[in-house]
Every structure is written in structure tokens, then in C-alpha cells.
Image 1 (cartoon, rainbow over the protein chains, first blue to last red):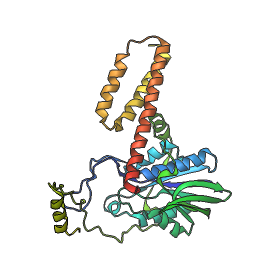
Image 2: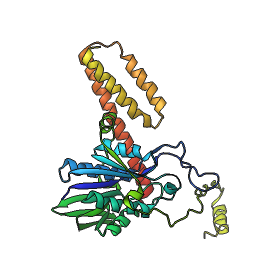
Image 3: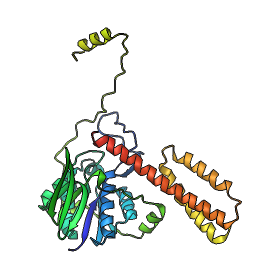
Image 4: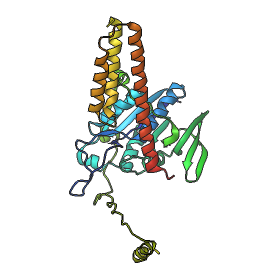
Length: 254
Length: 83
């Protein structure tokens, strides 16, 4: 086992920010808005770092695709305990169209290049909610996948994954190398404190372009329109039960 | 202030300042209160008392980390998991 784990992290708009749609309905406002690491990606990084601390794996390499600012997200992961980072530079129009298919092609190419034993990703990003990158990466590499993982146990050269599914938990055992996607209850991510961020400045971040990996990032999707969810209508007060029944009948509810 | 402790206090202040940026009531709110709390005890010279205050400051750091984690966890749980 090379003992190397690849962790993908995504820079997204912070979970606590109120999202605003641009007036032309083309996309969401991102300029000047607070960004941070996707919460599920934090859980993925934490799991990889925990495995390294337990000496199950030897090296944690964190990857992010995007413009210059993606390096901040990589630095946060390095402060959490990752060993080195890879920044795949994608900017402008290419970045706006970057989706799970393109990212999974990049992850697959990097997994081969870095001889990774395991890829851990967040189950989905809180901005696009695709929940596809992990699955697509596993398919491209023809590796087994343990998605929605809420518990991971290494058993020799196999991994036991407890998955959170509708109606309960499913336990599967998969061979390595494999792709894992992290669910909310996998672990409790540590906070990247200032001393750790300072220490992480010495760690290396390699810079690559998708072309260096011979990956084609053209998108097959076109976003036509982005709308806000419908505003909640004000409630109506009624005086009597008969009035309520009449209104409900009017609205076709009963 | 005793010299070796001074470095510890400054380090604690910087860490709390960094942590306080994400405070729900606003980074400025936190920073003002942080400054007030530290300057109130500026004249303290007893090393043991200073060490106690540093421990209290470290306790506050851990409380803040727990607060941030819980907020995020609850938000994710509410958005993605049906109760």
C-alpha cells in the first residue's frame, strides 16, 4: 500500500450566508460573499487526517479545483493536518461550468498520477447539491465506492463501510483502492486554529492545469436560469370554523 | 507583566481574535468585548492569577469551537435530513 489518500475539497459560499440571485437570473451573487470549505469536505479531510494519526495511511494529499482563491481552502485543509496540496487551476467561464463530471475526471487522473489508495470526498456540495462526484470518480477508475459513509473501518486490505441510507444503515465491505464519500455523522471536524494555519504555511501546494492531466473540462450542461424559491405567502386569519372550511373548499384542498 | 507570560497572553489574544471573526453576533462585537476583557486585567502582576486567566481564555476558545461546530452541524442536519 502506498498509503496515500486523496481528499477533494470544494470552496463554496459559507453555509450561514443568505444567498442572493443576480438580477439577470443567470447565477448566484458570489462577489464579496464569504466563502469557506464545504462542510462535507471538512468531514472528509478530518477522516483522512484521523486515519493518518492512527497510522493506517501514510500521506494525506488534498485537492481543489478552481481559481486562485481555492488555495485558501487547501490551506485550511493543510491546517487541519493534510500533508500537501494540489491546486488544479480553473478560472473564468471554465470555472462557472465546472461540474461533477469534470471534477471526477480530474480526480481520476490525479489518483493514477499520485498512486492513491483511497479517495475521500464529501457526499455533496452545499451549493450545487449534485451528490455525483464521488460516484463518477469511482466509475471512471473502476473502483468500488462506499458512499454516505457514517463509519469506516479498515480490515486488512478491505474497508468496512457503514452507509446512511433511507430507512437505516447498510454495512458493506469493499476492496481497496476505493472511493468514499463522507456523510454528516462520520466524524467531528477539528477547527483550523491560528497556530495550525501558521504551521501549514510551510506545506507545499502544487499548481496544475487540467490540460497537464490531459483532461477535457468542456461542459455538456448549460445553465438556463436561476430563480429564488417562491416567497412564502402571508397567512390568512379566519374568524370561525365554518369560514375555515369554506376557504379550504375554495382553495380546492378538501 | 512577567516576561515569559507576556508571550503566552499575546498568543492567546491573537488566537481568540482569529476565532472571533466568525462569531454569530459579528466579528466587531467579539473584538470589542475581547479588547475590553484583556485591558481590564492589564495591571495584573501575580503570575498565578495571570495563568488562571490564560486558562479561562483557553476555555473560551474551546467553547467557541464547540459553538461553531454545533451551529454548522444543526444547520446541515436541518437542511439535509428529514426528521
